[in-house]
Structure formats: C-alpha cells, structure tokens
Length: 212
Length: 212
Image (tube, rainbow over all chains, first blue to last red):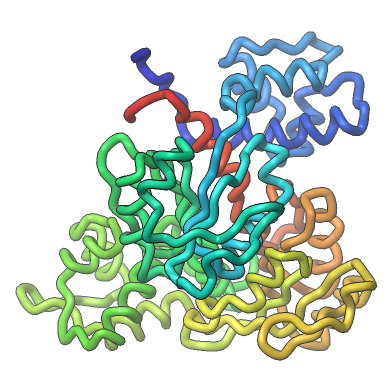
C-alpha cells in the first residue's frame, strides 16, 4: 500500500473551504478567480491560498488567476471528493435526522446509506430522503454489507463509546463524533470531533470579558 | 472594564471537556476523581489535566484526587457556566430545530430564547420546547429586546454573512457558525465554527490512504 501523503489537518480544512467556495463561484459562472478573491471568500490570506494550492501542483497565472472548474477538480482530487463516499449515521435523534436530510453532504459527494438507532421503537421509520432507521444491534454486520467505512455518531454522549466500538467492529475506520464525549479507537482509525457543546462553552467564557 | 484573562482556546475546550465529565461523574456519585481518571475519560493526559486545573488554582490532593462537585463548580466558574447564557438560533431548518430541542445545551446552562427564519411560511410554527419561529427581519430588534448576545447560525452557507450582520446589528458579539461559510465580524466579536461538512471532507481524504 502506498504511504499516505502527510498533509496537516489544518491544510485539509483549508482545502475543503476552497472547494466549497469554488463550487459556488463555478455555479455563479465566475470566469477566473484570483488567490486574493478566494482568500476573501474563505477568510484566509491570499499568500496562504497560493501556498496551499502550489503545494499540490495547482498553479494560477499571475494577473489572471485560476479557472474555477479546473481548480475545483484539482482540489477535489487531492481531497478525494471526486468519488462518492458512503456514510452511516448512528443515532436517529433530531440531530441524526437533520444530518441524514442535509443537502450539503451531497454537494461534497457524501451519500448517507444507512441510519441506525438503539431504540427499537424508531426502527423502520423513514429518515432522510429514502431510508429507514435500522436497529443499532445490526450495525457491524450492516456496515460490512454496505462497505461503509465513514460513520457519524449522533448518539447521546454516554452511548458514544459503545457506538464507536460497534462501528469499528463493522470495519469503519473514520468517525465523525458529534457528541462531546471522547471515544477511543484502535490505531488506523481516525476520529474527528464536531464538538458544538464545547464551542458553546468557549463562547460562554467570553461573556462580559469584553473585546479581544 | 477588567482586562479579559488570556486563556488559549484549546485550554478552554479542554476545560469544557472536564466539565462535562465532572457533571456525569457527579451524577454517578463518584466520591473522588484522580487526574488520571479524568484524563482517561477525556482522552487527555493526566499531566495536562493537573496542569490545566492548577493553572486556575484548583488543586487535587495527591493520592486522593478531586471532589467532583467542588471541581465541577470551580471549572464552571472559570468558564462562566455558573450563570445562564441566552442563545438565539438563526435558521429554523432541520439543524436549527434539532439544536433548539437539544437537551445537552441546558446541561451547560445555555437557554435557547428565540429561533428565527427568513422563510415567512415558517414564522409562528412551534420549535424547541415552547418557542415559536420568528421572522428573521426582526432579528436585530428582538436580540436587543431579549438581551441575547450569543447566536447560533444554522442558515444555508450563502445566507451566513447576512445573518451574521443582522445578529451583530442586534448586539450579538459571539457567534457559533454551523455553516461552512466564512463570516466576517467587527473587532470585539468572536466567531467559532462548527464546520462539520469540512470535517467530512477531511475524512474523505483518508479514504484508502490506509493507517496513520
């Protein structure tokens, strides 16, 4: 297996930001985009934009800029957004259901193929566009069947580790953790966290602390 | 106005993580907690836990550890979670509605006091526990009325900047941005991002890149 490229996570997040802006500008029919303009739209300096893109061999012409579609394709290739990624959602509460129906995921080539919940009363109910909630007890087997290796955890925090363990047992190796709980996974698995409750706490800290 | 304490954001995020674990352990009735145990539950080293807590003048007894309730109160005081924080949600789509009803916010002393949407057909409909969706056109006036300075943006990415501008016009100075769009705010305002679509893109990158 080829050695994975060593790209720092902040660089990947910036590339994903460029990708979104490029999709939008392409839809608007923008003929060329300067690194300055891309930077403005992303809240990133023009120098950083040029540095990131040239690192991946994507060059703009000085004074002319980048062709949005070409650049979008190049960034998509780096991030592997040029193929469909299957996603399973574990936890069919409000957040899980919102995620299952979120149109923004399709724009990034993510396809929600299954939604699970441990509450048997929810099993069989419709969710997202054309899915039915499945029993979380079947998670490992179903992930293998569906060949799905990306899992979003939208369970309560106290159920996060158990859900992660089941997902890993089913072959998942990339977990997006929407709970504030820490989950342990074996080597080779990647967990990214969407810790919105923790971010609220950060905002609380700045209450009455005035400007920064 | 007193100078705000300079605490790095990663430290605040760790404190918020300790807080959550402390609430849970307190509920379970744990008599004492060692820094090792707190670290395990948070996925953070015991040394880091001790360092963070001693920085804020919270000391554990060697070999005895911390009293959960006392430590929880001390951390809450630092993060200002010892008071109620009012939150307005802008964007009453599935995500905004899920957030409005999310019980985890109450556990951190966040109280959703208003939900707005630009779609007039949604205005007046019930959301969360006992709220009605309000017209986004009234956002600045209503935020001032409600004295709400924390706003969660759950609008489409293309509407994020306009929503942020309106929130700032209403006196909001802390924004939690759930959209993948960059939003510009004046000095003195803080924006934190919950960029879950970007995090999905990070996971896509690791497809077939094997172990890391």
